[in-house]
Length: 187
Image (cartoon, rainbow, N blue to C red):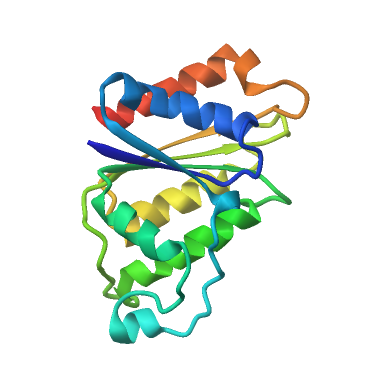
């Protein structure tokens, strides 16, 4: 099984990275192929809305997404992690995920998607706010996009709140949530 992780935080050892590694630890234990992309270290330009992908298939922008598209197609499961910045996903994550528009060949109401169907996904957010439901719309939105528009078979979401002063590695309940998400991926 091939599993990808996309880290939307610029901090390679921050809370989002800690939880990403915990999610993926279950797959690594099982001997599955795992690859993490640190989005802050990639050269990914923003979607231009040019609709080249609808007319010609594939995105015309020549950047790191070209090889990442192939990795996404080949993956069985994908983990997405982003901190909450100003009530939304990080700019690194937003830029990356906007480019998934290239997988949609025809627009609504009859979506046709070029992405291989049946992938499993995990989407999680980290946040400083204590209220777990404060930004719950983010996991719901991404789960809807992944399942409803992109053909993922199942998506597991979780929120990691209250990480302003305490690191994720000091929160056993969050580490357990991450491991549970990892088990979901390989089940």
